[in-house]
Image (cartoon, rainbow, N blue to C red; front, side, top):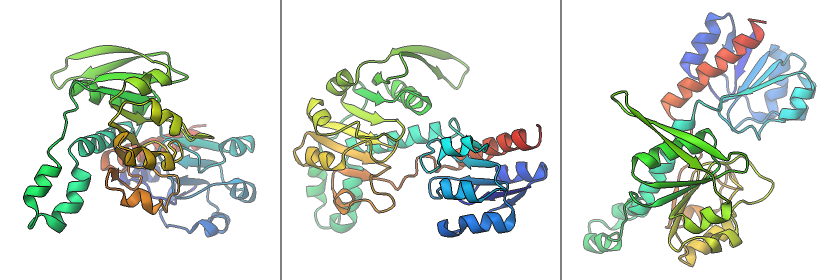
Length: 318
């Protein structure tokens, strides 16, 4: 059986699949050629991340396909319900990248509160001539300890964010339409642990009481954070989106930054990927990464292994 890992797969995933008798192909096939490649090579499984799309046309016209796999969580690039209605298995790896995404959230938070995103732009340009001026410009940093972090979406990633926040001494409040309460377990290096109970709150309360806000929700039909929501927030709030582009109204975000309602933003995802708006990319108060939440060696290793285990279970053990 043949597996096309069109957006890549870890070495551990390849080894696991090959040991089970699968042929793993890591050739990168252009989107417009995917259908033809699958049919020509009789591909049984296609694995994608966020780049390759598997829509109705591929599902209808590729009879050899048995499994569509997504390395990661969100599956908005796959017509999931339609594929399943046609008898295909659609799998993903929701637990594998949670820690990596959570750590990136705090990379953006630490960057924002100490102006690292702007300093890293200006020091190479002016550090040798305006050192004292830059030192003064970045003198009003703040600590995260003791501040309130609002987490919108309290699934696996949101709970991993909460773990780090609690470890830093932050207060955590969360909002989730589908989760009423969660127990956050903090494990320490010596085997000790503590449990912290968090009861979710209405979104409006979270917006009013948080010093920093981070989103961890799937793709939505509309914005979760727009002009009205920004008006509810504290002054000088920081906001992070490492979830999906389109959950924050970027025009409203730019206005809130320019009006100094929002102190800084950290964005790993954008409304217009892979071509974000230039006003977003050039704004001095936005910390930017190119959708790399799950892009750590550890996460990719777990993703590859988890995908392999699911494929083997579905096609070899049944």
